[in-house]
Length: 253
Image (cartoon, rainbow, N blue to C red; front, side, top):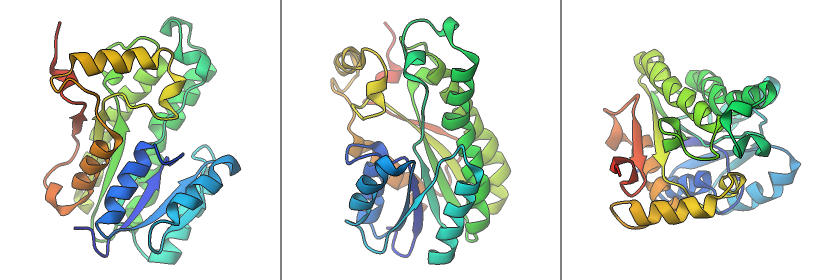
């Protein structure tokens, strides 16, 4: 499905990461992949996982440092010559901003969450587009807290709203280059980043009980949806937010 395709994956922290599930799905279908890591703490883990795939590349990339972003894409260009798809699975807000009331969000926490969780998509899309010489696909990760209030999600919900809006504007801008931009709104998954949200365990239990499928979604299911979106099977889909949450988003009271 993805033979001779080159992808770039942002956001792998460990084997439980949604980003890794996306990478594993794409790699199993023939894609060659470049991975980024943020900080030396994650380098060894990302390099170990990337080593499971053929002809991979691992580069540092802190999206708050434009020089690192530029260098990461230059490394992809030097190794592969082009880019066919990109998976953006980056989000961060200070832990204290993910508990209590949203109204107490500080200016610094707001700026940090919006820059890393939302602006970074536009940042990497701009850098990726010149390498997508034959068109391409960009996929990012959102969450239901972008449109409904989720306790303790707070400023991250606002950031995800900005992210989903950015998907639509980027899709409009990049469509003329045959570059598609979509978001996956995944249900809650017990990843390293999700543990930063207070009472995540209670949220997982509630969603598992209330969703039509009576369970929580898995990272593998999200990865398979990303595989679909970056493949030619999704060639007519852009600017969309696709729910992969066992149907939870359709439920009312």
